[in-house]
Amino acid sequence: MCNPFSGIYANEERWLENAYHCEDCNESWTDCWYCEVDDDCPGCGVTYTPESSELLLVNGDLEQEPVSA
Ligand SMILES: [Zn+2]
Image (tube, rainbow, N blue to C red; front, side, top):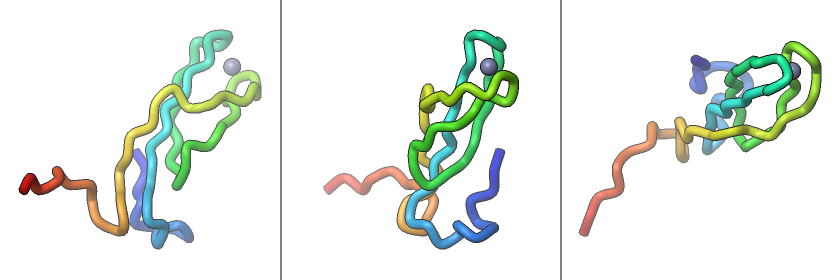
């Protein structure tokens, strides 16, 4: 699990935890970034797009349920 509140990207307005899976290596990993970025498999180096992305942060605040009118 990453910490979106530290590092040089702490001021980004949105932060995602991207989940990847490589079938060749049977390897799953996650990486945190401010967009749905491709990442290289740590086993074979093939570039993958995220299988799924979880939104961790929006506009500097933790994501909250929208207030219903
Ligand atoms: Zn791989």
